[in-house]
Amino acid sequence: MDAVGQALQGPRRVTGRVTGHRRTITTMGMWGKRDDMVVHGREPFNAEPPGAALARAAVTPTDMFYSRNHGPVPRLDPADWRLVVDGLVARPLTLSLDHLRSRFDATEATVTLQCAGNRRADLTVVRPVPGETPWGPGGLSTARFRGARLADVLAHAGIAPEAAHVAFQAPDVSPSAAPPQPYEVSVPRDRALAPDVLLAWAMNGAPLPAVHGAPLRVVVPGWIGARSVKWLTHVTARITPSDGYFQATAYRLPPTGDDPEGVALGPLPLNCAVLTPSDGAVLPRGPVEVTGYALAGEGRTVARVEVSTDGGRAWSRAALDAPAGPGAWQRWRTTLDLPPGDASVLARAWDSSGAGMPESPAQMWNPKGYANHAWPRVRLRVR
Image (cartoon, rainbow, N blue to C red; front, side):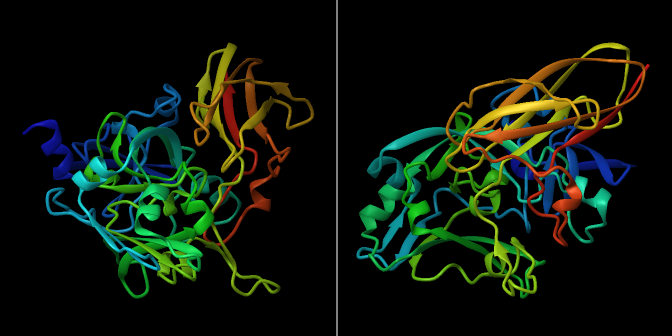
């Protein structure tokens, strides 16, 4: 069987062991992913790359790009697949992949996608988050996507002035939804018509793999990954936001006394993580290279990253890479000379708007474990 066939075949062999609060599972041939992915679930398939692997490249290889799914991966034949553009438009469209490629200008962008539950594991240390995947810092990845601009397709369809939102529908059905239903979310009109939102058919120079949304997905830079819908079949212009489960119920901060509806998650907050060394690592004495990423979210860049080894009393500035694109993360690194014994490394960032990060995960805890962007901490033992 060739590599494409193996990727489409999906799960083949799994072994596992429990390490702390996460289960590390070694896989072979599972959706074409590396065998050292941290697999949080087989069906639906949810996995993140280990920090050391994620830190190696500004663009994440497809075989280690994180995977977040809510149900079984749909099997769509690209030859039969069609995209329907409807709702509040003057000219409803039904487009094949060939139509998209031939009728609309193609563009490429390097974009970081991030799960809304990225770094949830840090919140579970504060208090349990029952029923939710304990994502580490690898619930995000960066790829080069190629496709048509959603704005061009909506302009061709003639989106109506009264259409305030654009919904995306896919055929994957999640049993966790109440009731079980196909996946649907929306974004506001202004976001949908921005030139950086893509209908992508390629990833890192190759057709989208099945597990990443083939034959077509939406890419919405700077927003939670849940809005970058995979296996896209419908784009619908409408007056109101999607009332589907994954927008009306899931992916919301919970209600409070003065906010009975809660907050729908959309634009990403500033975030930062340490990728190497990993939490709990035992290191020889001497210089230690510390690496990580920072991601500012929609329309912003990271201005500064700092690292502390004394609990936040003193900070040193880390070297910060420029982003590969306006929607991409920025990698950072620094070298620390740690004395023998137990050590703790903190990191924090500021973005181009002057916004910083909350100090403690306790300030970010919520019952769904969403949107943790508190200072990351790794604990080390130096011998």
